[in-house]
Image (tube, rainbow, N blue to C red; front, side, top):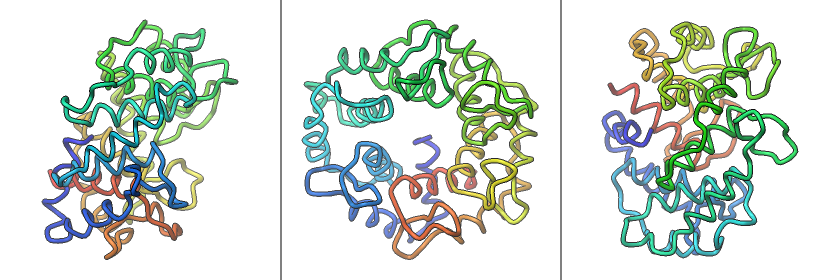
Length: 288
């Protein structure tokens, strides 16, 4: 994803400087990047750091590292945030990774494994979810560790195929979601299991003719998360983006502001690092 996002400046041109300034304004003095309330948050720090890396801009790694150290070994973090902690550490130069609590973070991630071989973000969930598996797989990669029982994860994902042909985040759900389906495509490829080619058609059916992708058929508006992840999955499956390129570019243009950030939807009145990174990822795919 980061490699593709690095191509975004091809289409941004001089506006890339505005986007860089946006990310910098959202880094707090403690080194973390702001959530929508303005507080430092590990989740948004991932997107802030990787947004700057995508623009090949300088990152104040020392400040980021100081922020990461405040979380210790991540023993109090949920799966989302311990995975983000691992991602942030992995983005630091090797010389600054001393003290990275690899073993503790791995144990924390592994504590979210379920009996079906998958992982779930919430402790009360009894079965693995696509999102939980995606976070755990990414966390293990960032820690430089082999994930235990990848076959079990593949079986878990297989059971999350929805009745409409996409993937849902939980079992026995009639309708798949665009983000869940794109995560499943990514995971299956990582697990060495080619995804069903029909998933390309399923994703294209969520495309809005004026640009962007819906999260699900009943969604009122297309959104940037669904658009960025759908483009990423379609590209990975070698599905041509040419027929939808211009409408998608128009959609992205409608979400961008001269403040340098991207809105998540047409009704979203806030800007943040997460959606701005998704804007870069989308532009990267559409620049090819």
